[in-house]
Amino acid sequence: MSDSSQYTLKTAEVHLSTGVNIVAEVASFEAIKRLVQDAEASQLGGLIQDSAKSRETPPVAAAHAPEDPLARMETRAGLKAGSLAKAKLVAVKDEAPQLLRPHSFKKIIDAVVVLIFAVETGMRRNPIDYDSFSALYEAQNLKSGTPRSRFSRSSAMLHKRTGERPWPG
Image 1 (cartoon, rainbow, N blue to C red):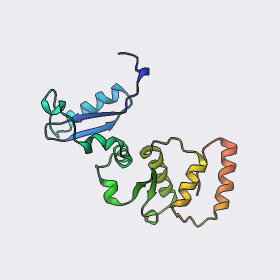
Image 2: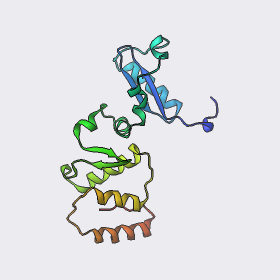
Image 3: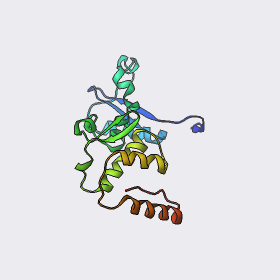
Image 4: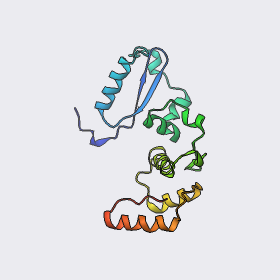
């Protein structure tokens, strides 16, 4: 196989005879091979090999789906397309993720994990620096029950000792 250091694989599309189109994030040719094998084994319909359907230009919505932050998050998390919007849990406004119902999380760490996932996967900002995440966190109006200054001091000490990224709140 040729040297792939000259390009980056991002997405692969598999079109099935039943009209189902699978769009997946991939990082290697091996991942594409596994995607095709899994699609064939799924019993959702056979692959469209070489037909007019596979050569035509995809609809505008399908062409932009991988660029949509929510679609990236759904693909990465293995969720059905449109499920995040339907759940009204997270949205993207002005290039920033927002938790729509932050108090629906039982633990604050769950809300923080979803927010980090939205930033790193949906917005493709990986890693996010502490100051940027801290501002985003503050904008979510999350209540932890612990004074913010205590978390900040603990996070700063942890970061200083271990070099790990501090998690606010």
